[in-house]
Length: 141
Image (cartoon, rainbow, N blue to C red; front, side, top):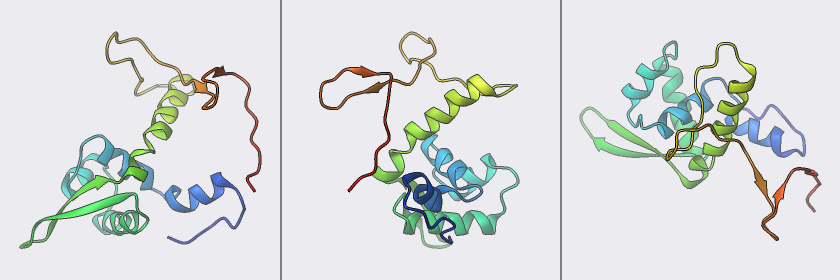
């Protein structure tokens, strides 16, 4: 994919990798357990086979997916998230929570697996372990 943002910004540079149409949805489908081309394609109605193939190759080259050949004739692959791809789960969860609060209708909610109640995002200081309510974004370097 073409870099669209030439800005020294984490958000801009992340969008250069995952900001193209369908990209996040493809990653989310793999995270949700759809590991074959056909499973992903069925889950994302309106996505062409050509574009899905392009995105899967791009995501593999970008280090977010890995493809494992499971059949040579015809060639079939099993797609899995790399560690970097799995780390996007927090981004997906944040989008689900945002949707819960801002979409009508809301399609999904995020709940605690043990008790079934909805969760919220909390930030915790990596140094002192305190829950943080006020954040500062600062430049690195």
